[in-house]
Amino acid sequence: MEIKAGLEIHQQLDTHKLFCNCPSILRKDEPLFEVERKLNPVSGETGKIDVAAVYEKSKNEVFIYQVYDTNCLVELDEEPPHEINEEALHISLHIALLLNCKIFPVAQIMRKTVIDGSNTSGFQRSVLIGHDGFIETSSGKVGIETIALEEDAARIISAHGGVKTFRLDRLGIPLVEITTKPDLKSPEQVKEAALKIGEILRACKVKRGIGTIRQDLNISIPGSRRVEIKGFQEPRIMIKTIENEIARQKECIKNNECRNEVRRALDDGTTKFLRPLPGKARMYPETDLPLLKISKKQIDYARKTLPKLKSELKGYLKEYGLNDELIKLLLKENKIEEFKSLIKVIDNPNLVAKVLTLYPKEIAVKQDRPFDEVYEILEPVFESVLNEIDKTISENDVKGVLNKIVSGSSLKDALKKETINLEEEIDNLVKEKPGLSEGAYMGLIMAKFPGVSGKEASDILRRILK
Image (cartoon, rainbow, N blue to C red; front, top):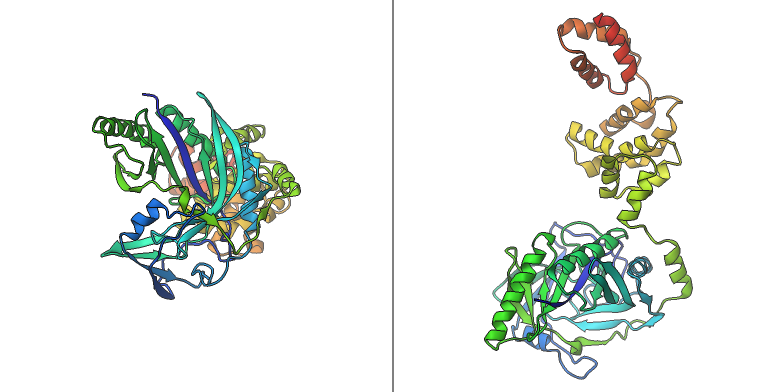
């Protein structure tokens, strides 16, 4: 059956918060203090109170907010918002342009009523950035209706007995909201469009990991009403979820009980009811902030600095003769900019790629330390170490030098070559372990003396074995 569907995607940006300077970091420790509130709905621009807000109010819930030293009075709604985060605006322009959108030169920052407790103020701030864009799919163009820049919600910690506890660490993290037009006509096209938009987002400066992206699906079949499915982001079960929703809506038509509603996607491909579908009555202007004006200069700069998509970056890296494994690692670890920088230091693409990906991983495994910790130690010295090749060290010494630095040696000490009599050492090794194959001996030699020339060691070994 043909469907009518559209996607709504929320992606966190990798910057400080949208309307204050607090860092966008999540906390696991105990809060400084807690505050308790109840929230009430207000009329939107239309003069009406939104039906979803009325439904939330009927629950009569109490909300507790955990506050940290990385929060400020803006998150507590005790201080007016600061002016919009310019870096977040720049990233949102990148995303809008990559989605072929037209940019709004002037936009009104709006308040969107949200009284489920996820915002201390009872509303979420949102501003339109772009409109009328599109992406290409194998089944034709899919329109991008709008791109908005908005605040993320507080993070729920617990809910029981009519009391919900939220953590304010996530509240205010910048989000882009991408809304497609209802152009998606099949489950397969929905999945293709979701993956395409995901590729565009990952090319930009966005946060990565669980909870940093949330995707919803609006869907209906002929004779039914629009349903919004929250948490529709697992590619593995997207098609199954849509097929189950089609079957559910067919049953609703049969029983004459179709309604506009919000449902939650479940891990088994089914959905459950959450609340009535909200409408336009929940929007009203933000009076504490001026109109957002986006100049031609800002748009031109965004165009000039547009990031490349993964598909484009693959072609760029292939030009350097890198194999598929190294290309995959550089893309996965998002080390393209670092690669561009270090390739100017030394014209050795394979070595640069290994320094950025393979070597830190191998050292992390060898020393039983987290990769992120190892990379943080090594990143400041990559350029200095590569600069020493053919001066104080050889290419084969690089991994050994990096390993010493992670172990605690200074750069100066790590660059010092140990004076060893390689021929004597190999001779001793052969005498200690007679009868091994040449390959086995080479493995022992390279493990014991990391950084030695493989060719030199192989030549010495063959002489000794004769």
